[in-house]
Length: 268
Image (cartoon, rainbow, N blue to C red; front, side, top):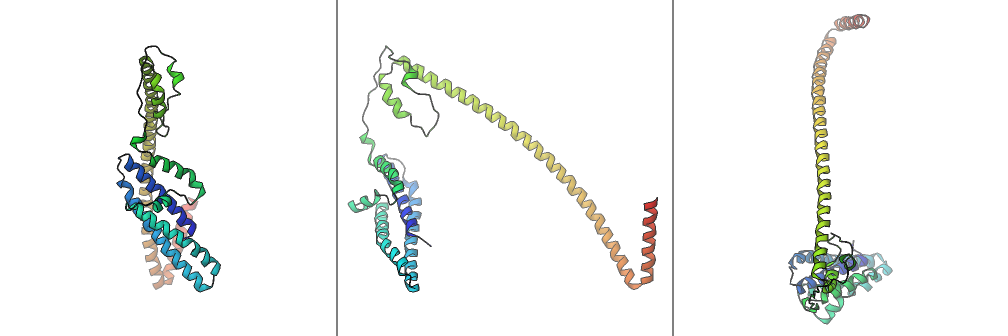
C-alpha cells in the first residue's frame, strides 16, 4: 500500500538522478547506465499512483472521507510531478518540467538539490582557464603551501593543488611530488605488511579447518560403527521378540539366561 509521503520521497530521488544524468551529459560522460534505474523508478512511481487511487476509492466506499480527502489533495500534484519527470526522462524539457525537476518535496533534501542543480548547471565551458607560473626563487616551503597528503578519493585536493600551483617554483613542485611519493611508498609498505598478516591468519584458519574436518571424519566413522552395532542388536532383539511370542516359556528361559550372563559379567 503506497503513501503520499513515500511517493514524494521517490519523486525527489528521481529528480536527483535526472539532475545527475544532466550533469554527466554536460561533461560528455556516459549517462546511459542510469536509464535503467530511472525507468524502474518511474514505473514504481506510476504503480504507486495507481495504488493510491485505488486506496482512495476504497476509503470512499468505507465512508472514511477525511482519509480519502487527504489522498485526493495530494494526487494532482503527484500526477503532475510524474508527468513532468517522465517528460524530462524522455528529453522533452520545458520551463514547467524544469521547475518540477529543481524543486525538492522534502526540506531535508534542499541542500542536496542545491548542490545537484549547481553542478548540473556548470558545464565544461564554465571553468576559468588558468596558467601555471613558475619562479626560480621559492617563496615558502611546500609544507606551508599544502596540507598533509591524503590518499582518499572522497577528498578533493585537486582544486586546491591547481589554485596553489600558480605560485610554486620548480623546486617546490619537485619537493612536493617527492613527498607524495615517499608517503605513498610508506602506505604501500604498511598495506603489504597488513596483507602478509592476513595471509598468515588465513593459512592458520585453513589448518584449523583441516583439523576440524579430520575430527569430524573420525566422529562420523565412529558413529557408523556404533550404528552398525545398534542395527545388529535391533535385529537380534527382533528375533528374540518373535520367538517370545511363539513360546513364552522359551522367552522366560532366555531372559533368565541373559540375566545370569549379565550377573556373571558384572560380578567377574
